[in-house]
Image (tube, rainbow, N blue to C red; front, side, top):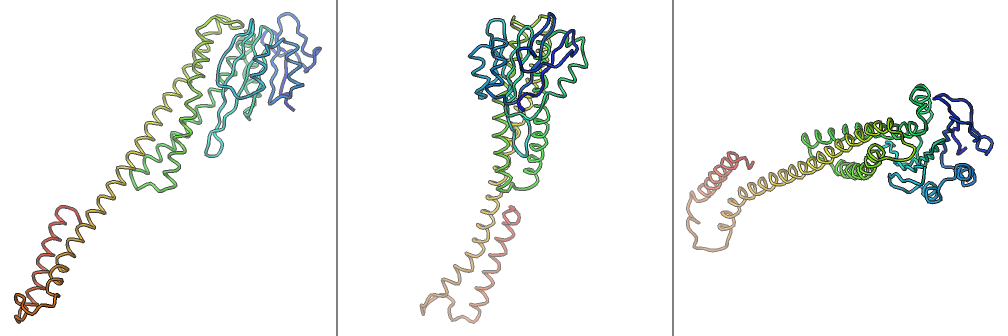
Length: 321
C-alpha cells in the first residue's frame, strides 16, 4: 500500500493512528499528524491535498518525482525536496523524498527509495522532549536520516578508490579495471551534483526566517549542512585521487611502451651488424676485399661477434636491455 504510516502526536508522544479520511485526519488543539507515503496514488494523495490545502504547484512537483533538492515557501507552508542515495550492487541508486511542512502536519512522500522511515519514526518517538517541538523537528529528522545514508556510499567509494590506486602502483591496469575506474568516477561526479543543492537547502532552513521553523530548531539544520559539506569534501578528494590514478596508469603505460621500444631498437641494432656484413659479402662480385683470403670468413665472424658484444654491453649499461 502507498500509505506507510500515519500517526497523530501531542506533546511529543503518539496518541493515535490517523486514517487517510477527513475524519481520521481531524486534529485537536496542540496535535500534529505525520503521514508517510511511498509512491502514492492520485486518489490517496488527493485526500491530503484537500484536507491540508496543499499548494497546486507543490502538489505537481510532488507527483512528478523528478526534482532537484530545493525548499519553497507557499504561504504558511514549506515544501522541501531532498534526494536520497543508496549503494545497489556497483552503482548508486537515487530517489526523492518530498516533505510538506505545516503548523499541524508533516507529509513525507518517498519516490524510488527503499529506505523506510520506520526506524526514524521510532528514534524520534524515543525523544518526546524534542518531538514535542512539532513538524519542524520531524523535518530535521527526515533530512538528517537522508544525509546520514550518504556516508556509507562515500566509505565504500573510498575503499574502491584506494584499492585501485594501490593496484595502479603495483601493476598495469587491465581494460576491465580502467572501465571500472571511469564508471566509478562518473558515479561520484553524478553524486556530487546533488550535494550542492542539498547543502543549500539545509543552509536556507538554518539561516532564513521561514514559516513553521522555530528559532530554536534552526541551529539543528546547520549540523545537516556540515554533514553534507564533509561528504562533498571527501568526494572532491576521491575524484582527485581517481584522476591521479588515471594519470599514473597512463604514465606507467607510456613508460612500459618506452621500455619495449628501447629493447626493440637495441635488438634491431644487434641484428643490423651481422645483417650488414653478411649482406655485403653475399653480393655476387668477383673482386671484393679479402674475398679469397683463407682467414676472411673467421675475420668476418670475429668482427660480427666483437661488434655485437660491444653493443650488447653498451645497451646493458644504459639499461636498454
